Length: 329
Image (cartoon, rainbow, N blue to C red; front, side, top):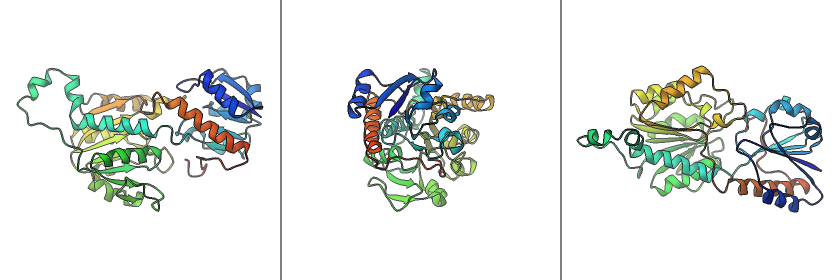
């Protein structure tokens, strides 16, 4: 059995963690190479790939049985036409990023609730604001809609619940309600949830169903003065609609972690760059470059998860966090 581990970009694991993988799988051949300098012969002979290969190279992976992604964003890999073998299993790293991304969402929310972007960007605003009525608000007691109840959404809901918020969770499977969620609903009840909420946190992955899901109608359904946070795929949000709502101060503030900017083939079109510049110019917006999932524990969690999955694979057991090629996540 040969495992190809691709390093590069934000994903790399050091010698100690490589050794722990080797110790967990004696007799397995580990090949650790840069993702941007792959020998196609090595690629073709790998039974397992751990990393984020360029999708167009997957046609060369003739021996591939299992691709494990060190991310939860899978939209570049969900087409079966990419693979040399249609029986390939695709898994994602669920549970690795929930805690740091939830903390990132909360950091942006707290900053916006206390008007920190406006004050931090211009010291002169201190004296100007002295006679103004304060525009901060308490998170406590707010109704919050969390879109997407994967590990990130669940961890976000836990933190908001601890702040005394009422949490409405939106997910496909409404039969399972996480403990920190007060009410669970599906997309058919999205507008009803948005109308009730002072805060909306988007944790959705990108699929054909969620692309540009949050647009003019959805933003208009939110309460005037609401705060919108996006730590899911930013491609689920119509940025032009969001900018207009923020400029009109209908939406009081927004925080966006640009997950798509971390994609290996990120291509920011001129139109999209213009939208981002328009948002970045506003004093009620926080934009971060897809850094929400990073922490000192990320590589250790990724390694532990892969070792656990590798044990399942070698034992002939069902892999966890398997991606459904038809639903897209």
